[in-house]
Figure 1 (spheres, rainbow, N blue to C red):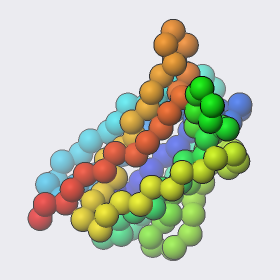
Figure 2: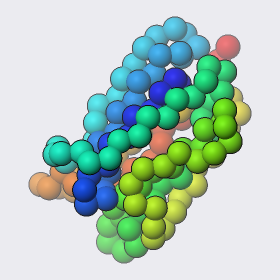
Figure 3: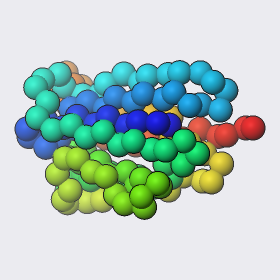
Amino acid sequence: LSKITCFISDGGTIEGIQFTLTDFYDGTTNVSPRYGRPGEFSTDINIDVENGNRVQDIKIYYTECDKSCYAFGLAIKNPATNTWESCGRLEHETKLYQLERNQYLLGFSGALWPGDNELVALAPIAGNITN
């Protein structure tokens, strides 16, 4: 995983997530689709992770969860600098995801509200390193 690009809308909800994965152990390159409602993106952040340093700690910030959970913000711990890189609104409920040592980040899984295409849930997808 070499770079993570995160787009956040003016309203603070996660409008789209785009990943560029270029250093899979099997040499393949995969780019995930964007999730959420299309629109103008006001904030973007590029997180460069050095080769050999794998993202293992991810925080996702949600609205106060009742009937629906809206993802407001995203923070990823950069293992090269041991600091949290974030975008969006870092408030309300926080969920911390920790990947196992033999896993890497594949992308995110999102749930869309029916008929609205508003992103209401976001969770990371992990893959195993087999070599």
